[in-house]
Structure formats: structure tokens, C-alpha cells
Length: 199
Image 1 (cartoon, rainbow, N blue to C red):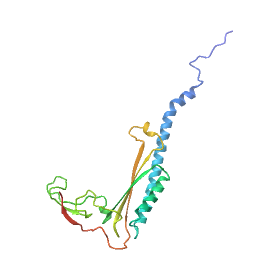
Image 2 (image 1 turned 135 degrees about the vertical axis):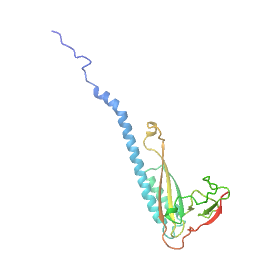
Image 3 (image 1 turned 45 degrees about the vertical axis):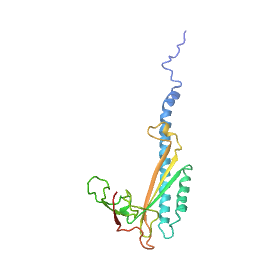
Image 4 (image 1 turned 90 degrees about the vertical axis):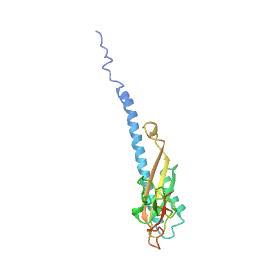
């Protein structure tokens, strides 16, 4: 009597390891992508909270000149999450919230969409030139609306750039908040700016 050997086609031993080998790279890539996204979102929330706190502290009388101390608080909060992060800070003062981030007004006499050929403009920040941002650098004064912007750059903790097209090894994010300074004196940004002429 002869014993029948099982056919190799029906043998299912080792199938699980082959299936895992096929699925694991995709699963690991998805997991790294999700962890990278979660890390970036968490860092963004930490940054947003830190700049809200720093902006509130810079809106009180006597805050001017303490920008290094306030920026250090934001830097410490971000570096608690991303130790290698580099941060860049910018403060711009405006006469009102609606002025934040807007260019200085000018009369486009020749209709070319550019401030040039001696066209008149309102010099909102008082620097004698037409600017794409009408803000005055710094903390401003009482009653000024101050736009506080922080740019953070750090090396990604997960190597997603090697696997996901369009990604880089570094991640850059911006966070901004705008608050009005307390009314402890006269407003420093002139709500009725002087006029000048475009070059």
C-alpha cells in the first residue's frame, strides 16, 4: 500500500509569513505617515499656545524691550517637543486689526497694478517708501494691533521623506496671532498716515 504525498499546491504552511512580508511595508509606511502627521499637529498646537501666551504678555505696558525674554518662552515650549527646532520671530504693529498684513494704499494712476512713476501712496509705517506690508516693526504702542508671527523649522523624527514623494527631511510651519495692546497711553501707529510718492 502506497501513501499519497500531499501536493505542494495544497500545502499552506508558511503562507502567513509571505502575506505579512507583502503587507508589512505598506503598513509601516502608513504608520510612519500617521505618526509624522500627529507629531507635526502636536508641535503646531504647542507653538500656537506658546505664541498666544507670549502675545498676551507683550500687549501690556512695559513689555517693549522684553522681546528676547518672551521669544525664549516660545522657544522653550517648542523645543520641549522638537529639540532641534530653529525659530524666527516677527512682530508688526498696525493701527487696527483690519490693517494687519495689508499693503499700503496707493493710487494706481497708470492702471498697471504697481506703485511706480510718482503715484501717491499713504505711508502707514512712516518709513518713506511704499511697502507690501503696512506694519511697523516691533511691539507698537498702546492700542496698536500687533501681529506676532513665528516660523519653526525642524528635522522630521520619522523618515517619511524617503518614501513619500514631495516630502523633505525638514518640516517648516508658521503660526501667527494678532492682539491689541492695552490702552496704557497714546497709539503709536498713526491711523491717518502721511502721503508720499512711489519711485
